[in-house]
Amino acid sequence: MSKVVRFEGHNYFRQRLVLATLSGKILKIEKIRSNDANPGLRDFEASFLRLLEKVTNGATIEISYTGTSIVYKPGVIIGGKVSHDCGTSRAIGYFLEPLIALGPFSKNPMNVTLNGITNDNVDISVDTIRTVLLPQLKKFGIEEGLELDIPNRGAPPNGGGRVTFRCPIVRTLKPIQFIDEGRIKRIRGVAYCTRVAPQFSNRMVDAARGVLDYVNDINIAAVHYQGDKSGLSPGFAISLLAKSTTSAYYSAELAGGPGQAPEDIGLQAARMLLSEIRKGGCVDSISQTLVLLMMVLGPNDVSKVRVGELTPFTIQYLRDLQDFFGSTFKIIQETDKDKTVLGAAPNTLLMTCVGIGYVNTNKKTT
Image (cartoon, rainbow, N blue to C red; front, side):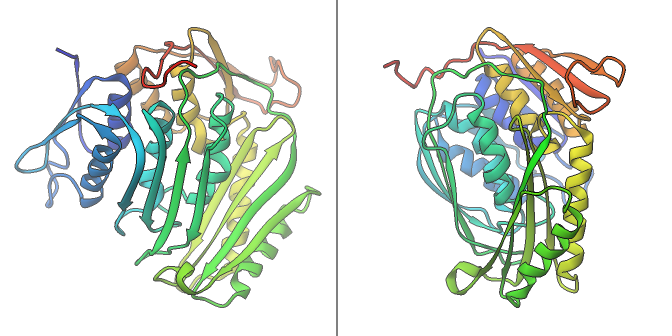
C-alpha cells in the first residue's frame, strides 16, 4: 500500500496533485472550504481534476458527497494529444502551469490545446509562461520541441483564447549550478489588445519604455488582435521580461480592465519589473517553485541556485516537497559582507539540494 499524504484546506491544491502524480503517493485532502457558505470544490478545481485524468492513465479520484474531501490515487502520466476547455472562472495559466511540471515525465510528448482566458491579474499569463517558465526547463536539459503557441487571445470575462503547449519527454534531468545572476542586458515584452482601439498597445509600450530607458536594448512588441483571434471580450495587457548576461530571467505582467488607462498599466508593469529585478537572485518569484522541483527531481548530484526573497507560496512548496519526496534544501542567506559573486544583490539566498535521481521509466533509453 502506497503511503497516504494528508492535507486540509483548498490552498495549494494544484501543486499537491502534481507532486502526488510525480511521486506516486496517494493524496487525501479534507475540509475543502468546509466552513464556507458554499463548501467544497469549485468548478475550476473540478475542471483541473478532469484535465489531470486526460493526461494520465489509471488515476482514480474519489470526491465526497459534499465535495469537501478528495482522495487521489495517481496513475501513469501518458501525455499525448489532449484538448481541454478551461472555462472562464480561472485563466489558462492555472491549468497550464502544472502541465509544465508533468510534461517532461510523460509517456508520449505532450500536445495540449487549452481554451479560455489568456491574460488576467489572477493567474500567470500565457506570455510569461512562454518567455520565462519554458526557458527555465531548458536549463535542465529539456529543449527540443518545447513550445507554446498563442493563436487566439481571450480577455476576461468571456475568454475565447486558445493556446497549444508541446513538451518533449526526457529520461533524466541535468543538475544545475546557477549562482551568478549577471547584469541586465536586454528587456523584451509584448503588449496586446483585443476589441479596443489599436493605439492601446502602443500607449502601454511608450509608458513602459519611459520607465525602463536606462537599458539600451529594449524591444516591446505592440500587437493588435482582430477577428477570430481577438476572443470574446475587449481587453489589453502587457508582459515584460528582463534577461541578464548569465540568462537569468525576471518578469512582470499586468492586464487592464474597463476604465483603466493603458498608460497606467504600462507604467505599473515597468515598476513591477524593476521591483522584481531589485530582489535579485537568478530566478524570479514566478519561477521559484518550478526550478526547485526540477532540482529535487534531478540526478543524485548537487544542484545549486541563487534566489531572491522566497514567496510564501514557495515556502509552503518546500514543505510539500519534503512531504512527498523527503527532500530538503540547505539555505544560506548571503548579505552584502559575504557576497561570493560579483554583482549579486544583497540578501539573496543560496539554495542547495541533492536530487532524488528521478527517472522517467516510460522513456526508453536509446
